[in-house]
Length: 606
Image 1 (cartoon, rainbow, N blue to C red):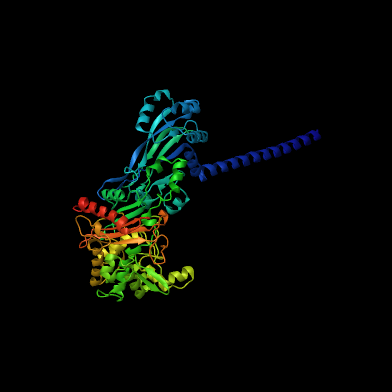
Image 2: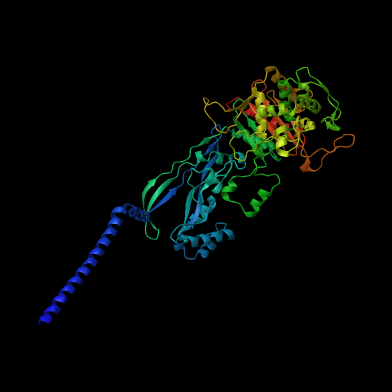
């Protein structure tokens, strides 16, 4: 009996121990689960709630309408147009290839395009719209819409796209759009780009990207587990970019394009009183609408391999020896340094010999006795050889830089080139050699190492027109109260400036002026012709120039001018690549522009 009692007591102790252990396990599990629930629901509840909400809500961007670009009178240069696109819902059309075969009767689909459509269909969910073709014509839209009931799942969508209503006119100035890349993301770091976003690549489109693009909106869409849209919860509208009004006059721009058509070159028209760009042309041009529509491989290859470089803005990227247009800078520097005055005369016999090297004048028989006015009028090389020799390269370089040569104009256009104004220090640093006296002579007629862009040359002659002020060129039309930005303020003596202006006026109006055949009709203008050597001229033993027949090696033709001489309103530079002589190839372009300006625009605010 005692044994049974002992076993019973032992059983109770063991059972109690098991119950305690089991209860402890349950209690511990409950505490663990409770702690985890507390952690999830209380400590991190907000975070997991947001994650759940993100799974339920899809944020979709609403593109902002890009700001238009207008000329100074409000005429549209760049606009936004409707873009009609054919889209389909793949799960509703059945066989995609059969659909594409049927729709090809109305829409041109290349094999490459079909391949891209098929690839895109496999990347996305079957209930999402699949874009078949964009940039549909109105005729194509009508054909498809009238048969839309035969294409289940198909629809015409309307988006906005950039349009350039004037085609290739002002293309280099306005620029074009393209898909964003790493360079764009770095330059516009304040913009949060997504893959496939469009951004300005060149011209005004890039220069004013932050102004034009506006601010995109957003839609909050409720979606189910597989991503189907259920309903729109909230919408924040996009804010369109503001219109941009430029200093450009579209009518003048178009006339300048016509004046330069058929050749390779550039022209720039400035208001010499404030640096406003009235027109900027680079030829040959291209149609920026093509960048919206897209290129075929052959079209793109032709564009980028064209030896006349239609994608280059020659007005700011073309660097050319300024030739005899540079002589106005030499004259102003020599007058300022006291190396010449109104009475200084030098004899031109057709050439000048220094250190057993002969430097020729363009007129083989020579000009005879020349002063600074007649030397400018007739563009006597020997006069300026002697003047630059007396002046020295460093004094000449200082004056040239004060006229805006050899440095960026700060216009803000991407890709602008600085040109080059050589000096002793430049040659030593670049080549490790000393400067030779003969190099000063060729620099004095705008040859040798000196280089300038058409924009710099327009700024140079504008400074002569306005009394010495070199403004930062601008495209943005500002209020009358906002002063232009001054880069250099030359303090020319009135008598010195009067001599140079007299010589430049004689170039067009004098009996022996090199551009006397190209006077504008209604105003008195001043200017300077120039011929820029592409390769060193070949001469016979007698010194007679051998004519160059190879088109690629012919001289560039230049002309710079301003008008009217008493109250200048426009300054112009023209370069015609391989045009030969400035008097015959470039001056007629400027004459046509001046005639148009003063005939059509001169009586109004331009």
